[in-house]
Amino acid sequence: MSSPVAVWFRRDLRLADNPAIEACSGRDIVPVYVWSPDEEGDWPAGSASRWWLHHTLSALDADLRRLGSRLIVRKGPAPHAIESLVRETGASAVHMHRRHEPWAAAQEASVARTLTGMGCAVRTFESSLLTDPGSLVTASGGPFKVFTPFYRALLQRLSADGVVPDGAPPSRMGGVEPGLASIPIDELGLLPNIPWDRGFRDVWSPGEAGAHKRLSAFLADAIGTYAERRDRPDLDGVSRLSPHLHFGEIGPRQIWHAVAGIPGAEPFLRQLAWREFSCHLLHHFPSTPLEPLRPEFAAFPWRDDAGALRAWQRGRTGYPIVDAGMRQLWATGWMHNRVRMLVASFLTKDLLIPWQEGARWFWDTLVDADLANNTQGWQWTAGCGADAAPYFRIFNPVTQGMRFDPDGSYVRAWIPELACMPAEWIHRPWEAPDSVLLEAGVRLGETYPIRIVDHAERRDRALEAYRSLRG
Ligand SMILES: Cc1cc2nc3c(=O)[nH]c(=O)nc-3n(C[C@H](O)[C@H](O)[C@H](O)COP(=O)(O)OP(=O)(O)OC[C@H]3O[C@@H](n4cnc5c(N)ncnc54)[C@H](O)[C@@H]3O)c2cc1C
Image (cartoon, rainbow, N blue to C red; front, top):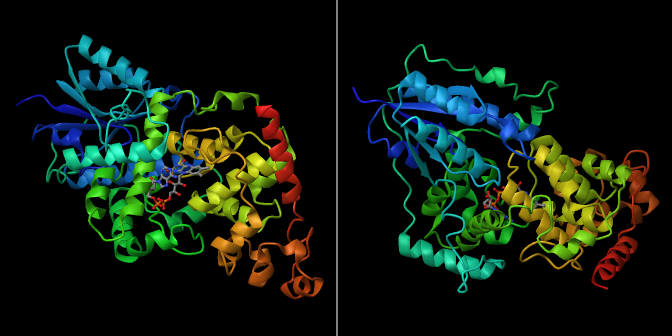
């Protein structure tokens, strides 16, 4: 019998459209996952991501068991874990997917060195993106820093190459000996000790089947109205595929293939292209998770304000749309994109707290925490990234709330204290007449916080800080 191939699962936790499996061409497969947070540099998975990881690994294991296999789980460091696995199983090749975080290349190189030294073949594949990051460059050969030309180049590449996902999963998968050691997923300690995850369980179904269910629901209910509804946090207008995509339970090729050609789908495909762009930026500018892409922002006069940071994190700033977003994040591990921009603008401009603090909080609390997208989202909002919103574009949380949550139902859903406030005042309760507050049962400073800053004043202060930078 021929020796098996070890397939090292990383952020590609699916069986369909999986080139590493496809390339095994019917040979026996040993599927392995290595838990190795110490190798992930400054960015080991945060609490919400760990919750997701626990459930998605369990789902992958269950899917493999249905095919007659199982997931072998080991602890890192990865080179050591993979080397042991190869020795124990006699695998003659290891297939893995590339990751694109700055720490990943060193890990891959180290694994490849170890295996090559043992005479074991190594093959790497791309499955989390539509194109290899770094493969699209400007006419002068440099990295794109502006989205639109990047998007044009991406579309050209995709129309030349086609977007064809890899095949269905194998119908049977042999290769794992009954005695092969594996750490029970429970023993990785990914789940929280105190049950803050209750709200997560109602909202999410981690795993490949959950990802496809989510895509089908989006195609059935929301793709046709995506362009009009995607900015409305009060409506169910977006796909919520982000955590599924992050963990590779579904691939971007599968989504692109399913969506392209549907009338009105372009704005959605454009968002997938932003995901590519973020990864492309991280590839070219690996220091951006901690440092601004535009170096002049290193001298920005940020402030240290632990009290304000805590109020922001807990959804107690007194600005309802900001607080609703931060509470949605805490309760479900996800926040609507429009509200992510609003809360990020509030932190970096109204409070002048460094964007890195916000990025860290998101990293710990988002189920879709993704180093490329999170870095790009924060730098974009703070004004210091590629193709960023100009710093002087400062979101007004009241007018944005009135525009994108016009009857206040998003705020009411996440801030029960304001449930009885009429739409006219819900985004600015401090301006509401006493009689309205009384009738709604709102006592500012008691049932709901007095706003911690005056937006108009803080806007001026932020612009002043920006001028000092340029001056
Ligand atoms: C401050 C800030 C932080 C963010 N942090 C993250 C993060 O950690 N992880 C993450 O996946 N996204 C992040 N985003 C981008 C965006 O908010 C989410 O991808 C989106 O809200 C996910 O919801 P969805 O799947 O319903 O998106 P949809 O609107 O349905 O879009 C489909 C997919 O396109 C991609 N996408 C959408 N918008 C963007 C964008 N602006 N940039 C890059 N890719 C995008 C996502 O993979 C998303 O799943 C951040 C944005 C901001 C402003």
